[in-house]
Length: 288
Image (tube, rainbow, N blue to C red; front, side, top):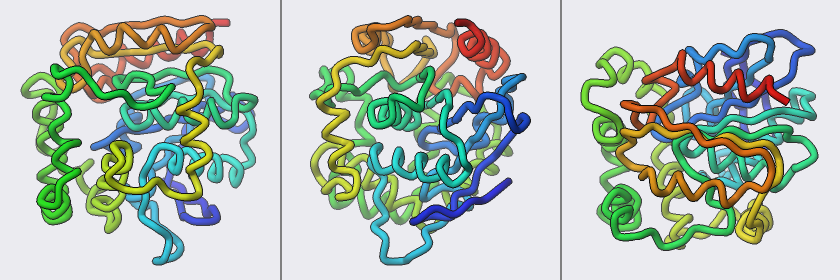
């Protein structure tokens, strides 16, 4: 575990590989943490896997800083971290929240990102649309957080709330208690609930976006397509992202694009099928 300070945060991150190798930024999802990438071996690359604000040992430097969690604000955190590390060019792989943060990085800093791989959560370029009713049912946890009682419950029982996602987004029995106990320690961060709530409430207009990220959020909403090499990976047994949603991702990319589905795998491929996922990602990264 390493730490680096930016203007707002002390960010904890995991690093593998050697200095001088191409950098791959690994962005985790929710509810998860940076250790989701521990079994994803990308030989020949230097990997940086940060814990977002509100997760693990990452801490705010000032108690007055708003505990916001919208995607553009997280992307700004990532750029601040990379700048502090002296990293200019990178490839990016994102899961769930990380998928959205990854494409936000491409929109905001296209000259710095060489390739993008998104896992589980499809592209939200062009702005968030009202989902079909089949998806509305799956997004109950988002609507719940947009209610006063939901806010109260998430603040009071954040780990119990997160556990429901682990139990329902992937096939039964995919994780054991020791893994959940270890990862859930990251959600004991004092800002986890606030960052979580802001992320979901702001995306549906129930909370204001972080003012510092407003311009970037608008830029993402105005961007319809991206042209860099892109890969989208989706578990066929994902309990929150439908296969039909994944089929539409190709409309967001005009350059080289590939979609791969994983039979029997749910929402957490990096934990459920790490060797398979690592092989797919390594092939994508190395192919010109």
